[in-house]
Length: 219
Image (cartoon, rainbow, N blue to C red; front, side, top):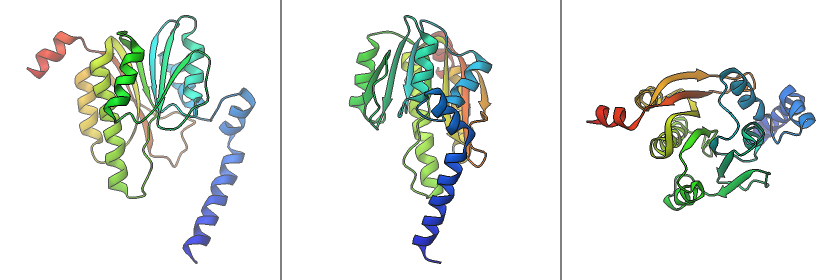
């Protein structure tokens, strides 16, 4: 069997799974931009992350389903800044930046949008373009999670929370240890809307430690 035929069969199987997926159907019926909305809805319903008036950063936001959930749940008077490498159709109550989170210029744009505000919650559903090479892809995922943690250290208020997508593998335990040094509690969430075959998990880190604690630990 040629590689082309294998790819065609794989694509057809994925399309069949996609169109019959209950979460895809629910997303279309409910006006959500993607099935991923239900991942955040489930986690937030369980863990009560989102509250009216919060300042939230949504990393890896396109096509915008998480931003839809956040914008509704932090209204009125909430502030939501979303960022993605891909374009995202505008949403009411969302300030969007298109760019690569790994680039300093894009980070500066995000910082300017914050206007000195400290962040209550950082969400990251970011994932790199997958190469199919396991070690390469895992290192890219871990890098994005590490950059998300660094952003939290610089811009999150004490007591704030972080929800970040990760894949278990090389570097996972080291990342988790680093997160535990910045936040009071760290738990793993695997919402029902995450496909069973997917290796993705979400680290839920709560209660960013205050500056005095962090300086003492690093000292």
